[in-house]
Amino acid sequence: MDVVHNDSGPQGMRNAPASADAYAALGWIEEFSELARLAIDEEDDEALRRRYEDELLRRAAYLRAAGLFDVVEIRHPALRAMLADTR
Image 1 (tube, rainbow, N blue to C red):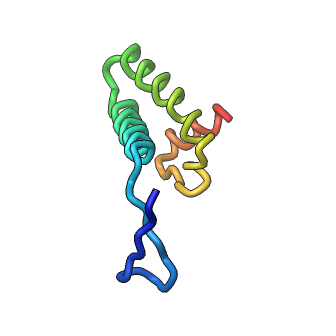
Image 2: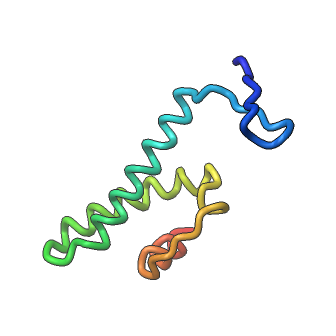
Image 3: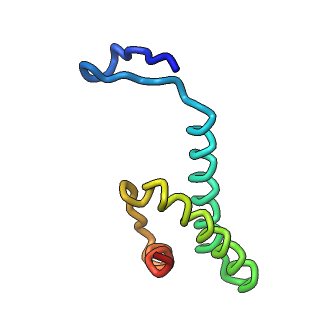
């Protein structure tokens, strides 16, 4: 992989081209965010909300293993508690 110097950044900072893995990771984060919003907003259909939560928690395990929650804070109290319970 070629590394390209970025003159607009701090001295010595280098940027590499985005890889397919980076795009896949962004997709997982986007899906996680959407599922979190859906789970939080769903008030009428308990079965649907539970499906959203199950899928959300499945993705959270992978994102936690990748270290996302070491650098990102979940601010929604119910979502933060749900994720804390699954450790």
